[in-house]
Image (cartoon, rainbow, N blue to C red; front, side, top):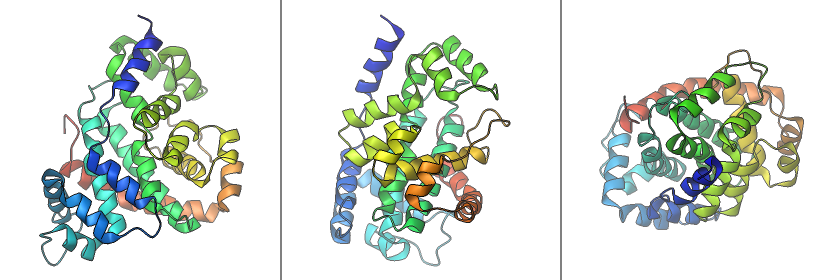
Length: 288
């Protein structure tokens, strides 16, 4: 069986997001969604409810009063933060099941995903995007392709890719295509399509490195592209310190962003890294 066939089979066989996460995503697609409907869906999953309450009552939020219900969580944190906690809790299993490897370190990949999600949500709010929670979800899920390929490929192949990705002159997507058989954005597109996620999320996962598609797609693709480049430019998830990362002009123009906007979001991401580390401690991948 060829390497590409193995990857495709693994991508299409990845366990889907829990049903509760899919229902939450469906609800928040409507900018006028009902908070009661959101709370009602989360309450149907006792395990998820328990994890959310544990995170809410951790030092991450430092609340004056304990949170004892999902309704309390919404009252204290707001519905956007509830969606954020749902997606964090429902996505950690993919990182947790990832074997240690040089190409996609579980803890490092999770940290990069969380940072990108934070940046994506912040940019969405700055641009007046109707669905900041969806933007956060795009950031959390955009590395699914890395996870799938790290699960199926031989350690020697992953190590070869990791070695070439440390070259500052290398194009990361070209390295992935040449060594692994597919780049992580194309792989993430296949996973999100197989899961039948909202079309906006599928396009963002697949196209956020493609300037032509960034111009043609809706805003979420541009949001994810800018957030990903911003986080990588901060050195988070970038294996090569000398490789430059700058959002493409098409994305900045589409979102009407200036350099000062990016600087503000970068400062926010840096501040929020403490919270990212707290979330790592609450929902850790293996080896932590």
